[in-house]
Structure formats: C-alpha cells, structure tokens
Amino acid sequence: MLLCATHAWAQGGTESGRIELLNADRGEYDDKIAPGAQRLKGNVRFRHKDALMRCDSAYLYQDQRVQAFGHVTIDQGDTLHVQADRAHYNGNERTARLEGNVLMRNSDMELNTPTLDYDLRNRRAVYSAGGRIVSRSGNNVLTSDHGTYLTNARRFIFSRNVLLSHPERTITGDTMHYVTSTGIAEFFGPTRIEQKSTTIHTLRGLYDTRNERARFTKRSVIDNEGRTLEGDSLHYDRKTGEGLAWGNVVVSDTASDMIVRGDKGRYNEITEKAVITGHAELELWMGTDTLYLHGDTLFTTPDSSGKRVQAHRHVRFFRSDMQGACDTLIYNEADSLISLFNAPILWSGTDQITGAHIRIALRNGKADKLYVEKDAFLVSQVDSIHYDQVTGTDMTGHFGDEGLRSLFVEGNARTVYFAEETKDDVKSIMGVNRADCSRIRVELKDGKVNTVTFLERPDAILYPLEKVPPEELRMQGSEWRAAERPKDRADIFRSIGATAAP
Image 1 (tube, helix red, strand yellow):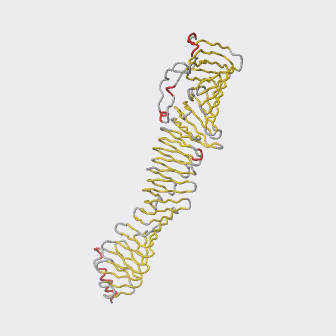
Image 2: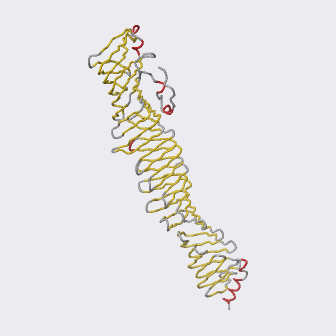
Image 3: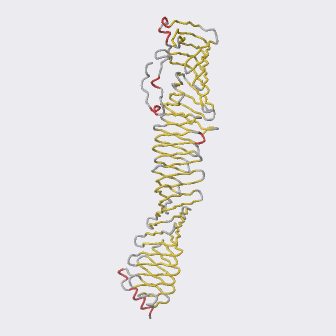
C-alpha cells in the first residue's frame, strides 16, 4: 500500500513536468535519514521529460530533487548514456551532478571522469577534475584537466593540459575544440602536433584528423627533420605532404645552411621541393659571409647530395665581396656552383663582368673560380672616366681574399689597358695599351688590372693618353652599369630601369 501511495504521489502533476517514478521494489519514509523524501530501494527507475534514470536506491524529494546511489544511469533520447556511482538530480533545473567512475557515451565517443555536471535541458556536460575521451570513429584519445561537451553538436571544448593521442600523431595544447562526429580539432592558443618525422607549431587553426588536413590562421611552423615551412596562414595535407603558406613565409633547411623568404610558399615534405613567390629572398650562409638573393620566383629541389636552388626573373644578389644580376640563376649545393643565365652581370671590387653564361665555383663558402662563356667582357674602373677592358670568347678567373685576382682570356682576346706610373707618390695615367691577342692573362690587384700578359704574339700599340684615338678608348660592350649594382641586402629588391650611362 505504501509503494502504491508513493507511486501515485510522485506522478501527481507529471503534465507540469514533475519527476515520474516508474518502479521501486521497496519504498518508505524516514525523516531521520532523509527528511521530506521518499526512500526507494531495488530496481529504482524514474522518468523526467526525455530522460530515464535507473539506480539501486534513491531519495525522491517533493521539490523535485533526486539523490541516487549505486549503478546510477541516465539515458537521454536514443543515443546518450551516462553512468556513475551516485548522482544528484534537480528536476526543476534539469541538471545532474554525477560522481564516482562517471562514464558518458554515445554512438561515436566515450567519456570517463571522476565527476560530471550535466545540463539535460541544454544538453551540456562539464568536467573539471580531468577527463578522458575515446573517439571510436577516429581512433583518437583525448585528455584534459577541464572539458565541456555539447551533446547536440557533439563538440568537446577542452582546456588546460590538452592531449589528443592517435597511433600516428599526438596533439598538445592549451585550448582545443573537437567534434566527435567529424574528427575535426580546432586550436586556440599554442599547440604542438607531432606525427612521425613532422612537427607542427600553431597558435590558431583546425586539423581534420580523419583526412589528415590542416588549416592554420595564425603564425604556424611545419618542421620535417630540420626542413621547415613557416607562415602567417598555412594549409597542410599529410597524405600528399603538401604545405602552403601565406604572409611572411620562411622555408629553411638547417642541413643546407639556407633560408628562403617570401609572401607565398609551397613545400612538399615528400619530394622536398619548395616554391616561393612575392618578395622572394634566398639567404645562403657561406662560411663567415652570407649571400642574399632575390628573384620573382625561387625553387628549391633535392639533388643527389644536396639542394638545388633556381631563381627566375629579375634575379639580383648581394654578398660583401660579390654582387650580380641576371634573369635565371641556379645554385647546386652538390658541386658548390652558381650559374647565371640570360644577360648575366657580375661585380667584384671595381670589376664588372658580363657574358652569355657565368659560373662561379665556391670553395669553403668563398668564391674560388670564375667561368665566363661566350662574349666574355671585363670592365674595371680606373677613375671616374677611364676603364680597363678585357674581352674574349671565354674567360677563366680565380678569386682571392680581396676579390678577383687573375683572368685567363681565350678566343679573339682584346684589351684596353691604362698604364699608370707613380711620381712623388701620386699615380697618373701615362698611356693606353690597345692590343689584340688570341690568349691573354690578366693579373688584378686591389680590384684593379695590375698586369696584362700576352701569351701569343699580340697586335698591340701603346698610345700616349693625350694622343689615343677616342674610338680606341672604349670597346663595344663596355658599358659601365654601376647603377644596376646592388648596394646592400635591401637593394636586391630594387627595380632596375634603363641602363645608366658610365
């Protein structure tokens, strides 16, 4: 009779949303233990709105509160299931506080935590004593100190010591959102993603753990065994190895002692190929000096034993002892060779060198040998109006500590050489040596022509300076192009207009 009365009392006003007692093996009142409550034992079941609660025993209060003990479960709808050792349920607020071995699960995830606060009306669950989530569909395990689960959206909001673990990756961060139905993780704050040989650092973005694609909207870095791609915005596809970056892009390779910068970059960690555009700049460390190079587009590709760098269109470079410009430049790390194509020009000290094709061989990070092929031309400034000139089919040169120190010229070699003399410690030009010879050797000192040696019988004439014919002073192709010469690192980005007159 008591059980029947209890059942009827609890059902009173169910239309207004009161808790409905469905079953209990035994019920009693005991004001000493739980004043104002029904004490229910054995196979206890309640229904409230769309939720069903089960437990071993419970106290049901007239103000629509339930204290449940032993094998507590709450099922809401067809998919969400929660279980715990005990629970406190407020029917007016439709909130539950679950304690002891709490487990929440639906079709695609399982949450374990010591305590959980669950808002059944807004379908919002919160834990603050640490939690562990297993995403079945994505094979991801997530842990954090604090977490919120929005059950309708199937979205977790994690904070403090967040860790996402997967057999192929780990993600650590401060704040992360994770949608169990899609496997997409969003990051807010410093985050680190590690997978095999690749590590990603980001401040803001998202990662699709199922398709292994990422989009980062704040400064981010992809590091693949010392090769990095960095940018203000970055996209990454792990399956293809492709990374795209925008804004203050940096591609670096510590093994090759080089950094490439630009506005937009693409790097593939599988092929190790990179493309940089927009204010593109290569920074190549050479011993104690650094070469700075600009081109409209820069490419880096792997070679048999190093890197290959290609620069295309409006190429200009600066190093303290050497500057140059051309339309296409190729640098091979394997043989330490810089090749300039399409209207190349090179400056070293007071020397200006042009030709159809120029190659510079490096040794120990310094310029060692020079090869100029076809239409080779050296112009060296003597003073503000006079220039030594050497031309031939090909040139081979050697560099010293002070720049170019010698040249060997072959094939229709010609020279205009201003001979100097010193009187009372004052140097002056005494004459002009105009000579043609098939092979010439030129020695330079302090960046200027010092001696000219004719290796075969020359056709030569020495003119006094005041009697030299004007047409003998300048050979065709001897334009002095100092206005085009990069003056420093920043100057490699300067656009070059018309050739300046000497």
